[in-house]
Image 1 (cartoon, rainbow, N blue to C red):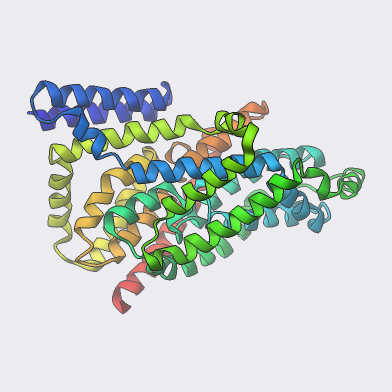
Image 2: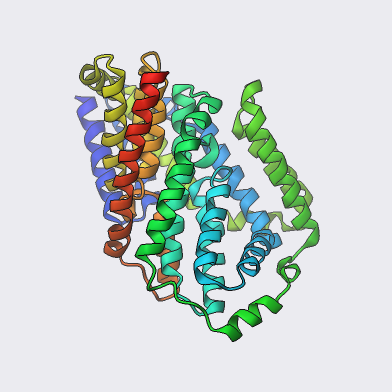
Length: 424
């Protein structure tokens, strides 16, 4: 009986979140509170057990990355890099479009998708406003790019971290399996996006380009001290995320050490920096993990894993197809973070069959996240930034671009991972 109650609370909570008519953070926390009361009232478990099963490692990683990004952005580091990119394109709109997408592709390997859009969204809008061009094609394309570009890296997205920790995914194997695919998808998507947005990527006026070229990137640096500290911090993160897994050094401990070091050096600015951290997303994750913990306590996740296992029946190739398409479609209509949180323990059950099943799941939830605008935090941020500028991106316009491109990527990935399934 308690399992049915917990499942009902879970479904109601996520229907409410997906409707976008309620605050997702408040709803997730309320859902966690209600399942805690239900477990206590039926004598199934104390709330302490729910709290103990929350993925605190992931919470600490996300919080640390938000702090690092906030400090780097405050120093002017990202604005400096964006202006450097713009100057190198000499104001050519299509070259600028390609350069910004390439920049998104690279930083998505080291930052989660939310952080990437928090960095790129405001910068892109400012550049486009200065050149008097439409920023909406840029925001849509950047949201799509950061979702698929994040797949080869454990730290590239919160779903990656969740699945990797639960299923014990080898970071090196993840990178080797999906990095070539990610590059192929970038080479396929850029020409398609240029073709789709061709009429909107109009050249900027020459006098606006000239004005832009006169601005030195040095003027973007607000604090030279913080600027150089941010560069050092990024260098340490890259080294840590690259070589740490070989020594069983988790990304969370690297991130929290770097974040704490930056805060310590920030001195009197610490309170101001912490105010800018996206605490809404962090508490949303806490509420979400509390709900998933309740599903785990009542053995719902085990039952779901057994049902999926009965479908796959040890067939690796069928399992790859299943783990690409079903989670991807779920991630399109439900935020990809809860989908990952539910399916990560199931992926762990299948690790013995083939490590490629977990790899397929990581790819699926990231690419499935941009099939529809509500599937990924990066999409939602792109829409929010456009609304703030009073030039909103309609959900239907986002879907017209992203959905066909996403299905093409899922098809390519299916062929790629099936090939690996045969070879590995």
